[in-house]
Image 1: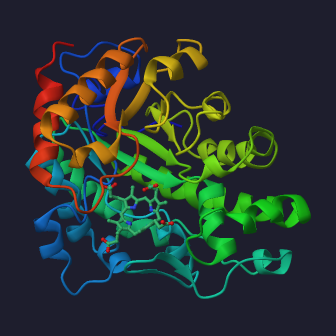
Image 2 (image 1 turned 120 degrees about the vertical axis):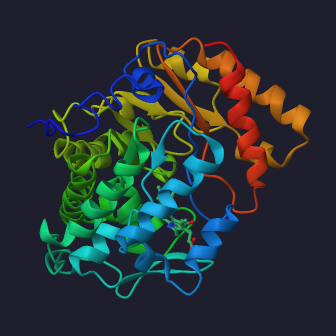
Length: 353
Ligand code: 1CP
């Protein structure tokens, strides 16, 4: 199982890029940076092209998804594009009744709560993923030597929406289900693992040079629950893309106690949220895992000297790790001034690697 010879990671375009070098634990010629949610509402050019088009529809128009992916790369000179899509797109493409409601987030027509609900879920097919492959092909043709990062939602985070039917704070529904009805839970997590795994594989095969699994809400789990009820299905999602040779990143928020378990599902890089300094994350991981993170998104709205000092601290703390890719500790807040992001990128690139 390998990528095609004309894939950007195989034909010389991205293999030696700063991002891929750092993900592989090397020291690149410039310190790489990208931002989670760099595409999206902080950019006026995004708001312009999205006018009158629903979120999930915009993800399924290949030209539009490619354009939105490229916008922040052009504007900020970040070291990678993150594919514009959403973690619930595989559900939508499988035929699940799901929408993204403005101001709310993902909402399902019918929540999935029992073994019968899980058994009725439609299967995602390879053909349904064609708009995703097409958008990735269009994007990487424009990106040249800058890598595209593909992504998918981890089964727990996806299931958090599927069981609750909408965003929730404490994710009680899935956390109850894994104990009250472990069989139904395992079946749901397996369905989500395969849907996400196929979605990520489609992006990598079509031209993405790295993949990130988002388990954004894993921080609501105890370590014991994570290891027993969640890690096996996250590993199953990644089984779809292991061996392709593309670096794999695993990120969640509130996961300071889970970092080792998240690395152990079999990834190359661990994404760290803003709560834990990177030198401590590196210590917990034994000093052998490249890290990504972890500028506090709250500081993007602070006066520049405060933000600059914080970014320099993150760079210094990350130097302990075998490789470090700068990012935020979670996504770009929609109200962020995009000029601040550009300035942060310039600052990061100006510090000697
Ligand atoms: O109309 C809009 O602009 C809606 C906002 C929006 C955007 C821009 C949503 C709805 N999704 C996205 C794109 C998106 N989603 C990207 C690509 C853009 C980029 O990163 O630059 C990615 C990687 C995601 C992934 C995603 N969706 C995650 C994991 C990352 C994270 O932020 O933790 C999650 C949890 C979702 C669910 C989701 N989709 C949208 C919203 C508002 C939410 C969160 C809702 C909640 O609070 O539970």
